[in-house]
Image (cartoon, rainbow, N blue to C red; front, side, top):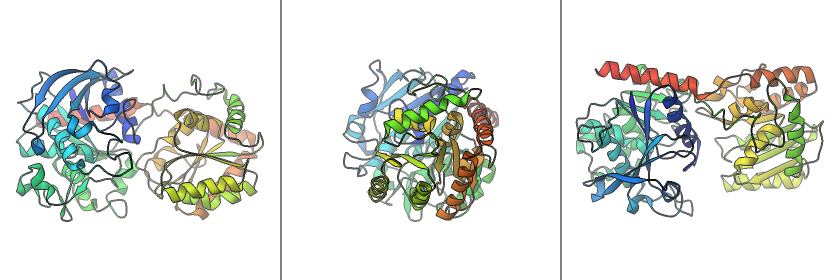
Length: 475
């Protein structure tokens, strides 16, 4: 099968969140099981700078807003996945990130930018495509690719479409006047189309016009069919229950492998996890914590936002320190939360350490050096860090939501609490302190977690089966 994977970010080229991790790994995993998966990506400066081998293979005109674009061919670094890049300098060659300027403000023309991106994806799936290679399935990710199924269906294209929701909270909502500005047919602006509470929603378009809808964990697929996590889309998603499936994300087990990770101070495995002690000591030294082998060390790597429950960590942190624990935090986000985290570290020098920002190497070392890993997210479509934690032997403490519920087994591989409150997190933390005092039980839990298989192969085979079903149904 031929699959065109339409995404706005992918590691190692460009990343703002978990979508990039999925986009970097899943196409490669699909190719390993015989699926010809290729990727379409916008031509941001950071992308083009890393693709010296990119060559022009097609050109497009008559795009929304009167824009023109070139289509470049390249391949993903390391994985080698074939890659198509939309080179439209007026839309994508600018300072800042993929969606925001250098001041963190959304680009004012995001609707136009990703409408052009989506229309090119749709054209590549139609009979008039300028390429010899044609996808059997168009697989679109999040709101940025949401108009691709709409453009395809409104032009009469028959190629099956899949839309994957990575986080329903981000919906690509724009004023109703945007419909005419982009050249969408007026009749598409209805409840049976792209309209969402009086506005245009790119994600609503992707969900309505797709043949199948997937999301990134089975539990999240159920949660988004009702409030509060349905985010206003629960009616549509419930009506399409038969077409909605949750497929759990995997992780890159080559990149995240404690027995060969060069970022770590020591190497270890599920069979011989004792060397983690050296990683813990190295992490304490690196982050300015007291070198104390007997102090339970809790790690946090997250966007510092309300969704991630960092306020709950702040609520229990003083009690954690009072019981003899340590806390190592890494992340960036809401400035108020950042300030509160920095104040916590200043209040407990040597016991609480934080780095406001992001450091990929340090994220690996926190996973390897922490005894426990806190993920009290209020909602989490899938989550990756809890799977990294299990693989690295950091026992996860998670709220029972989305992919966290699907990947952590309470009392076996970690601790799961039901309500996203400081009280419930505190009770789970108390269980962790009790476990820490029982070395044999803690070793059993570490080994149980490290033995779990979260490789991308399982996800890739599930997606391949979904594609095959769509192709057979269309035939």
